[in-house]
Image 1 (cartoon, rainbow, N blue to C red):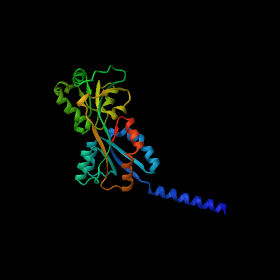
Image 2: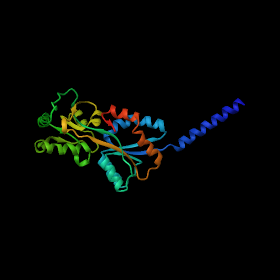
Image 3: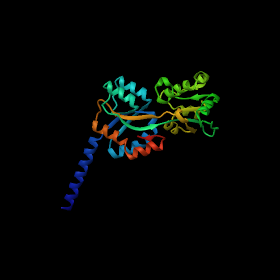
Image 4: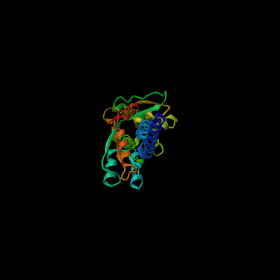
Length: 254
């Protein structure tokens, strides 16, 4: 009798595991590089907890949105709220926007290099004028920080003065990497992105009202392969585990 009970229990467990594996989903995720470090840290926890797997494509929010507009169909997307709103209005994403985290912008220099004073807007402006080269994301690629920094240079009245010393990383690349390689003296980029780079020191976030806070949000694709799994991942991004990963990588959980 005991052997029959054990055999029956084993059969039930096998069936449960088989059902779980059968229901597991492979989620295609399009995500902005701004949350890459945090998402890479939390992905194994989500996969272990849910049984689902994440197939993540990284890029600038604008570049990923263009790919969706061109016909690609991720199950989940992590972009900026305005881009998600546009995709929803164009019927390229399901209704619903879930804010997950926000980020400011920081300046970095090569590891162990002298750090310029950026404690005030005037000091920050002078640091840019004094720098031999300045790296930030190409505004043409649509990255949030690149678009903002380009406008900020105009606002400070120094766009013409520094235009010949500006360097951009490849589309979707990290400006801080150019500093680490010695190809630029300073870099300005989203805080979590520069925190993910090696060989650099963070000078600080942009001072006062020069800093720009960007919100990132998650949405479900128009035709997800598994709607329940896609929605569960979006909800996971609001969990304590996700919040901790965001905080550890320079983001403020929403």
